[in-house]
Length: 134
Image 1 (cartoon, rainbow, N blue to C red):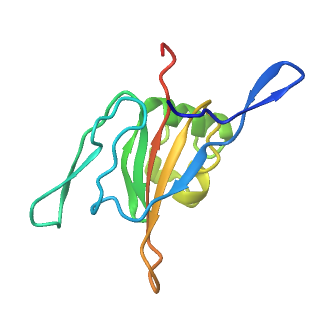
Image 2 (image 1 turned 45 degrees about the horizontal axis):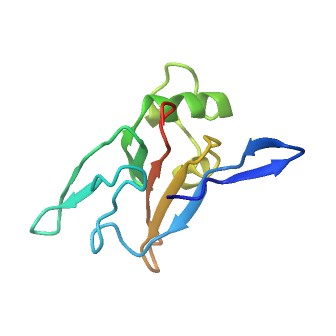
Protein backbone atom coordinates (compact mmCIF):
# COMPACT_ATOMS: atom_id res chain seq x y z
CA UNK A 1 0.00 0.00 0.00
CA UNK A 2 1.15 3.55 -0.68
CA UNK A 3 2.03 5.89 2.16
CA UNK A 4 -0.23 8.89 1.75
CA UNK A 5 1.40 12.32 2.16
CA UNK A 6 -0.24 13.51 5.36
CA UNK A 7 1.13 15.26 8.38
CA UNK A 8 -0.46 14.93 11.76
CA UNK A 9 -0.89 18.14 13.70
CA UNK A 10 -2.84 18.28 16.94
CA UNK A 11 -4.81 15.15 16.00
CA UNK A 12 -5.91 16.55 12.64
CA UNK A 13 -4.77 15.39 9.16
CA UNK A 14 -3.71 18.07 6.73
CA UNK A 15 -2.93 17.38 3.06
CA UNK A 16 0.41 18.44 1.65
CA UNK A 17 1.18 19.23 -1.96
CA UNK A 18 1.30 16.31 -4.37
CA UNK A 19 4.15 13.85 -3.84
CA UNK A 20 6.58 14.13 -6.78
CA UNK A 21 8.60 11.10 -7.85
CA UNK A 22 11.19 11.44 -10.62
CA UNK A 23 11.42 8.38 -12.87
CA UNK A 24 13.86 7.53 -15.66
CA UNK A 25 11.54 7.16 -18.65
CA UNK A 26 7.88 6.45 -19.37
CA UNK A 27 8.72 4.32 -22.41
CA UNK A 28 11.53 2.06 -21.12
CA UNK A 29 9.44 1.07 -18.11
CA UNK A 30 5.82 2.05 -18.83
CA UNK A 31 4.11 3.51 -15.76
CA UNK A 32 1.26 1.81 -13.95
CA UNK A 33 -1.31 3.48 -11.71
CA UNK A 34 -0.04 3.20 -8.13
CA UNK A 35 -3.62 2.70 -6.90
CA UNK A 36 -5.17 0.13 -9.27
CA UNK A 37 -2.23 -1.14 -11.33
CA UNK A 38 -3.54 -0.18 -14.81
CA UNK A 39 -0.68 0.34 -17.28
CA UNK A 40 -1.20 4.02 -18.08
CA UNK A 41 1.10 4.34 -21.09
CA UNK A 42 1.50 1.58 -23.66
CA UNK A 43 4.31 2.37 -26.11
CA UNK A 44 3.86 1.26 -29.71
CA UNK A 45 6.21 -1.33 -31.15
CA UNK A 46 7.98 1.31 -33.28
CA UNK A 47 8.68 3.33 -30.11
CA UNK A 48 7.39 6.54 -31.70
CA UNK A 49 3.85 6.59 -30.38
CA UNK A 50 1.83 5.43 -27.38
CA UNK A 51 -1.67 4.66 -26.18
CA UNK A 52 -2.97 6.26 -23.00
CA UNK A 53 -5.14 4.14 -20.72
CA UNK A 54 -6.92 6.44 -18.26
CA UNK A 55 -8.13 4.80 -15.06
CA UNK A 56 -10.32 6.67 -12.52
CA UNK A 57 -7.17 7.68 -10.59
CA UNK A 58 -5.44 9.49 -13.49
CA UNK A 59 -5.47 13.24 -12.89
CA UNK A 60 -3.34 14.33 -15.83
CA UNK A 61 -0.80 13.37 -18.44
CA UNK A 62 1.18 16.21 -19.97
CA UNK A 63 4.56 17.23 -21.24
CA UNK A 64 6.26 20.57 -21.59
CA UNK A 65 4.70 20.57 -25.08
CA UNK A 66 1.11 20.44 -23.83
CA UNK A 67 -1.70 18.41 -22.27
CA UNK A 68 -2.69 14.89 -23.34
CA UNK A 69 -5.23 14.28 -20.56
CA UNK A 70 -6.68 16.50 -17.84
CA UNK A 71 -9.41 15.05 -15.62
CA UNK A 72 -12.33 17.09 -14.32
CA UNK A 73 -10.94 16.61 -10.81
CA UNK A 74 -7.59 18.15 -11.82
CA UNK A 75 -9.41 21.00 -13.61
CA UNK A 76 -11.34 21.77 -10.42
CA UNK A 77 -8.09 21.77 -8.46
CA UNK A 78 -6.48 24.20 -10.92
CA UNK A 79 -9.51 26.50 -10.63
CA UNK A 80 -9.27 26.29 -6.82
CA UNK A 81 -5.55 27.14 -7.01
CA UNK A 82 -6.27 30.11 -9.28
CA UNK A 83 -4.19 28.91 -12.24
CA UNK A 84 -7.20 28.23 -14.45
CA UNK A 85 -10.46 30.11 -14.88
CA UNK A 86 -13.76 28.25 -14.48
CA UNK A 87 -14.71 26.78 -17.88
CA UNK A 88 -11.33 27.62 -19.45
CA UNK A 89 -9.34 25.27 -21.64
CA UNK A 90 -6.08 23.81 -20.40
CA UNK A 91 -4.45 25.55 -23.37
CA UNK A 92 -5.22 28.87 -21.65
CA UNK A 93 -2.95 28.12 -18.67
CA UNK A 94 0.10 30.37 -18.89
CA UNK A 95 2.20 28.74 -16.17
CA UNK A 96 4.66 25.87 -16.52
CA UNK A 97 2.94 22.48 -16.52
CA UNK A 98 5.64 21.09 -14.24
CA UNK A 99 5.16 23.90 -11.71
CA UNK A 100 1.36 23.89 -11.55
CA UNK A 101 1.04 20.11 -11.38
CA UNK A 102 3.44 20.16 -8.42
CA UNK A 103 1.05 22.47 -6.52
CA UNK A 104 -1.93 20.09 -6.51
CA UNK A 105 -3.22 19.48 -2.95
CA UNK A 106 -5.44 16.44 -3.41
CA UNK A 107 -4.81 14.07 -0.46
CA UNK A 108 -2.70 11.09 -1.50
CA UNK A 109 -1.87 12.51 -4.96
CA UNK A 110 1.31 11.33 -6.68
CA UNK A 111 3.07 12.88 -9.67
CA UNK A 112 5.54 10.92 -11.78
CA UNK A 113 7.96 13.18 -13.67
CA UNK A 114 10.56 12.26 -16.27
CA UNK A 115 13.07 14.62 -17.87
CA UNK A 116 15.24 14.28 -20.97
CA UNK A 117 18.89 15.09 -20.55
CA UNK A 118 20.58 18.30 -21.71
CA UNK A 119 20.25 20.31 -23.75
CA UNK A 120 16.44 19.98 -23.92
CA UNK A 121 15.52 19.01 -20.33
CA UNK A 122 12.03 18.39 -21.79
CA UNK A 123 9.70 16.90 -19.17
CA UNK A 124 6.64 14.64 -19.13
CA UNK A 125 4.26 14.29 -16.18
CA UNK A 126 1.62 11.82 -14.95
CA UNK A 127 -0.56 12.54 -11.93
CA UNK A 128 -2.69 10.12 -9.92
CA UNK A 129 -4.89 10.37 -6.83
CA UNK A 130 -7.15 8.02 -4.94
CA UNK A 131 -10.81 8.46 -5.73
CA UNK A 132 -13.14 9.67 -3.00
CA UNK A 133 -14.97 6.35 -2.55
CA UNK A 134 -11.77 4.39 -1.80
